[in-house]
Image (cartoon, rainbow, N blue to C red; front, side, top):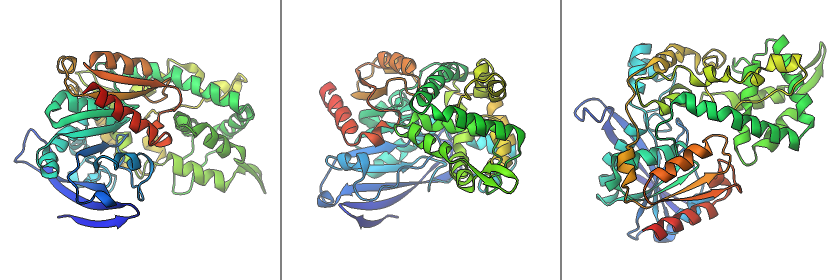
Length: 433
């Protein structure tokens, strides 16, 4: 069943599809996927090639654009665009603290969530492609984790693709989660140093907030506990083009004077709650480390374990030693399932996923070495979220992949640089073809 409607300059159509939960059991349980088709208003009746968009994450639904916003404006010049909510997100059978108990207990929930990685997403795309395009291949645009999915697509079903465009999402083909985070913490430290160089006043502001949290039990609106580790995780913002500025504005008015003395302001607490809460995307926390699982080794809370190798991130030691408090980045930790009300009911499920030892490979290095699909990838210099060295090693391993390495943008370059970024990458795929 479909329904169409208009926004300025664009015609939108809602699509819903039924696909197997486990594509290895096509006759078994099914789930529902949601996707939004977008086409330029003056081209709605034309026969256009399709572009499939895969969002970053994991755990986030596709962008909800209004009209021809951001990169979509450039894409609609040439394509019909399918904005797919990947399974477990948005309107595609969402996986949350409210819905997962329908599966049963933690063991059943964890087993269910093993079907929510890139390989299943790619097979979803192949299941719906004949119904969308009539069987014709399409171009995939993958942002961040969506780029990971695009590399899986090139590995598992290259026949479904005319071209692949990847922005900030070339994964390592063989790195374990430990390797990923061992490379990540030095990058994060560099981003924090750059932030403090830009805003030196924030060194003392962050130390003051961290010291307060080490000596006070702060519960945010909605029940989220603001620990010092949770405060440090606000450094996730530093991976975006405007993130350093947004972090600065957050820190500058953190305290007000109340009857008992200085306390964290309601405005600061409300902003922090919105930034820290996983209520809208719990799947991110649940399966984030599993996107690096490809062998018999468990991920076993890799970000938390590897952090211990970098003692400079210990806020209490920083305060005691008169050092800057370092923020952290795109890492998921077991304590998040204690501090966040949206994650607390899922703690045991997360533990079971972290302990799994039967992850299957997500990429085919041999197939990628003889790839024939035109591929172009934007690699952002010193990307905080995806290691540049890992990305470039993968670029060399994929036959015909062309890279645009730039320090003009951060990880969100597709948003910040649209439509220029998309236009350049599409041109690279045409040159390769």
